[in-house]
Image 1 (cartoon, helix red, strand yellow):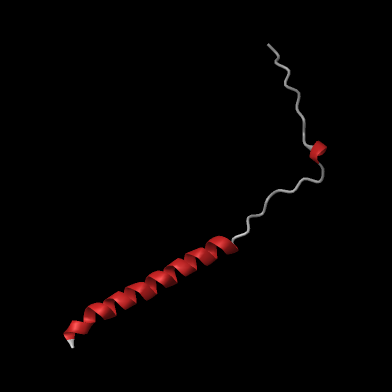
Image 2: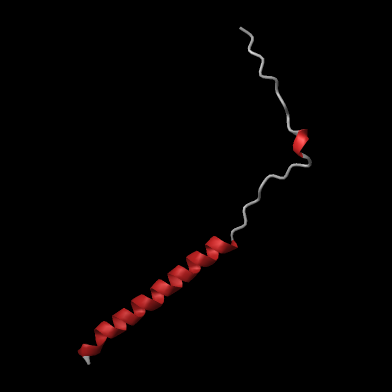
Length: 53
């Protein structure tokens, strides 16, 4: 029956859209960036800001 084809296209669109959205959300929330960790706060290199004019 050709009258049922729009419903089939709509259901396929919904299924693929939901799959795409789930895939993107899982990739977004699983990603864990590696942040640089310092041993102590005061151990950073402190360069003097002396202007030599």
